[in-house]
Length: 139
Image (cartoon, rainbow, N blue to C red):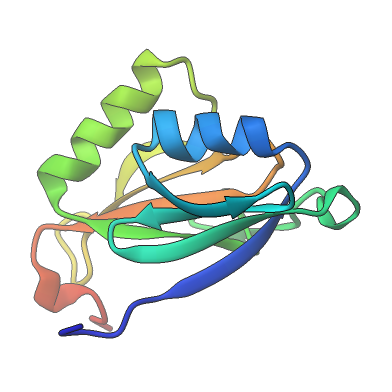
């Protein structure tokens, strides 16, 4: 392993729906599984959908740039072309967006593309991109 990999476990209320969303829609390769959980490969990071319906609850939102951003969320930073392709694939599949794809901080330090979606259990995911990766932590 040349770099650290991220591991995230999160609750879902339906493993079949999680497999459709993460496996089919997002294109995550499936790893090990049991009747209670499924490992997914999210761009070389291990995410694990655990069957825990009692843990699935609406995500609180906070105001950011005049939009209601889900406070609890996870996601990826993608190359710009990959971000655009994913946004188009999700649109073509009829996926609802919490926040539609748009560019934040246009022309400023940290310019980024972002969008938010929910998985079938209500977990919020953000997908971001930067034209200049050196700007990821720009202030």
